[in-house]
Amino acid sequence: MSQRPVQSRDLPVDVPEPIVALNSDVRLAIVADIARALSANLAQETLLRLIMERVTQALNADRSTLFLIDEERELLWSSVAQGARHFDIRLKRGQGLAGWVAQTGRSVNVKDAYLDSRFDPSSDVLLGYRTRSMLCQPVFDRDGALIAVVQVLNRRSGWFTVEDESLLTTIMAMAAIAIVNAQLNATLVHNNLALKDTQEQLAERLAEIDLLFAIEREVGATGDLDAAIDAIIQRIAVTVPSSLCQVALATPNGGLIVHRQERRTPGVQILAFPTQLGLCGRAMEHRAPLEIGPGLAALREMAEEEQLPFQPAAGLVVPLIVEDEMLGALAVLDRPGKHNGFSDADAKVVSLLSGQVARALAVRQERAQAEREDRLAALGTALAGVLHDFRTPMTVASGYVQLMTREEEPAERAELAAKTLSQLDALTQMTRDVLAFARGEQVLLTRRVALADFAKEVEELLHAIFAGSHVHWQVTAQDRGMARFDAFKIARAVQNIAKNAREALVDHKSSQFSVEIAGNPDEVVLTFADNGAGVPLAFQHRLFDAFATQGKEGGTGLGLAMVKQVAEAHGGTVSYRDTPGGGATFELRIQRETRSASGGDRATTPVSSAQTIP
Image 1: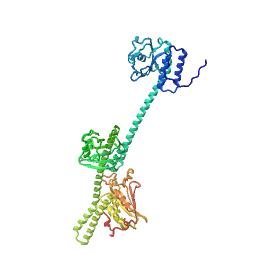
Image 2: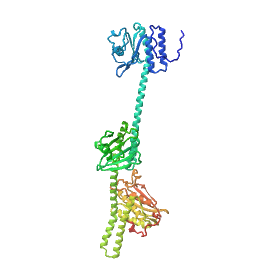
Image 3: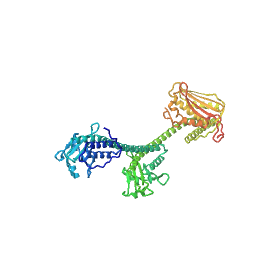
Image 4: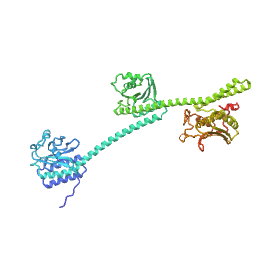
């Protein structure tokens, strides 16, 4: 038998006129119609409604209902229900005939529902309907799981037959595909919505993290606390736009320092208040966020106390607290726009910002305190080192004065007096050098110096430094020519390097220290070598930094830094290398002809040994 080709067409959803008796050809046509509907591009709800209409038509019934299973709540609900009055019907498993089918997974075919004890007439009462015959079947997916219950009511002629049961089973087997697809589509839509919500939440979290990171970075990059607070206010103004944003910090004496930025005024204004007053003071007093609104009592008075430029209609003020310590408060007032209030999202961001700002400020204040303590400690150590350097000329001057008291010859007394004055001049010059180093300045008093004479002065200097030690030292003058430099400052550089060597060799047996004076037509080169432990590799890059010390108890870290400054002032360099066989070697290079900053010599007094040895 030839088959009629299937024509593609829109499927009607209107219920045709009831047919009193349907032959097999009509039923087959209805089944084919349902099959075509399954392959058509119809919405799921439309498809299920069409299937139920065809079920009603094929079984010559009055109406049909499709109950979908809600596994989580163990309910049945009417996805598709027919009738003049449609209500959303919900049943529990076991309730009524449909509930019994859902509970047992078995079909039921009754001729008179009211004679069956399982029947629940409540829906009839609600709808004003009278159920007589009923055919009710479970609907399973391909895995055998119950997904729906179909209910067909009131066959128009007699009651439902075995053939009706078979036809309904066939149709609902096909309908199961649409039901499963509908469930999958609903799950997909739900998952997509959940994914979108998750993406939005993730975007919010990332934005919050970026904001907190930006604040942390900007606070860390600024030079002082005021600049850090200004950076915080600028960031807050971008994140939560407001007519006024301010950060108030508590002072140790109970006052407030307020950093304030108005939207229409460039720059950040800093105000000082003797007491913790106004809106920020109230939030700090109660240690809780303050939300400003029309109903807030005494708002005008608090705004005047805080010298606000306008009367705020809305605002958020959050205290800054870290580990129960009150640091201050953060305030944003009057969001620009028609409605100048702040949303819940704004409040959340401000609360988040307050916590980060409080932590950042606490860290910054701790760091500033540590830096102050470090500077004081470094200053104390530096002063101790300077006083230690003063001992040598003071001791020598004291010795000359004692000799003067016992010397009767005028010529000898005059020479001792000159030497005493020379030591006092050395103290004055050392004081100037320290002050110049602290200011980053270096004034040279260059003179013509005979390197042979300078070598003798270095010998006298080393004799004083290594007196009483077991260090064997020597000075070698390879270059005995003339040069122009500040002999006093170069001698001070020699002294600093030699004193470092003595400290490095204090526990070293067979200690040796040497100074070699050499040069070329352009430079004078002083090389200092010892056979001590040398300088650790990890510290060599900081060797000439101010206040950098390594392995020296009570060291100031200024000696080699001053040597570097002296070398650079003479147009030269100082460098370090390990001594072959162990130890430290320093090389000081200066220009053979060094001029002062003015281009000429700053002094006319001839160089003498007494004047160049501190």
